[in-house]
Length: 316
Image (tube, rainbow, N blue to C red; front, side, top):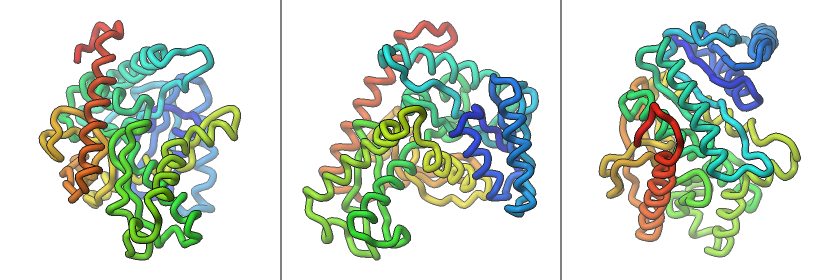
């Protein structure tokens, strides 16, 4: 049985820990956080649900990274949301510092874990984690595409009034403005989406998908989405622990796939016990492939911003 650590015991982190525990594939899920008592209390609460939900995975909470020792998979949810008055660069610097510290502490106690990054800005933080950890690129993965694809599927099902199980949706690229929808591969009951909806309708659904997280933030007033994001991260953990090699859209390192090199980008990839075991190259339309390549350029530009941050331990 495997050991999984979730860094950050906020709503996203604690829900991820719960989802992973309920899969009953790990021997232990550890939540760590800087707030004393928070991960311990949440872990106790989750453990007291095990009898009802019938799972054996033990959940523990700690403020000490020593308790994360020998983790097989680590999910980094720690980070701050953008606050009023903060510039994008302010947010980048703060979260880069957090992710750098977390990564170093994890590697002090776990020799060769697979790390799943969910902290925003996602593409930059995944790149930073890979650079700081010095792990092989396939063992550092960003979570974005599963969430965006799930949101896309939801909006498609609502638009057509069909069961969610009848919908297959796929988005690639970056998590944000350069998200790349792949309508040519989306289906409803096996029928291509492009044969069901007009280009205008699809574009409207894509816009709603790209703004899906912001819409939730606007409605909640305080806080952000965590149910769907946690399910997405936990699904990645499940595939890795079970060595299923199932294909998911994840933020993975590219070395020539889709004609793109040396960048972390949202692409279809098989996830197994080695992390990303293969980047899968789908047959995209010319428009979709061009958009994916443009997204890679935008991500590279954003990653270059890490050079301007005063972190003595990193140089990209």
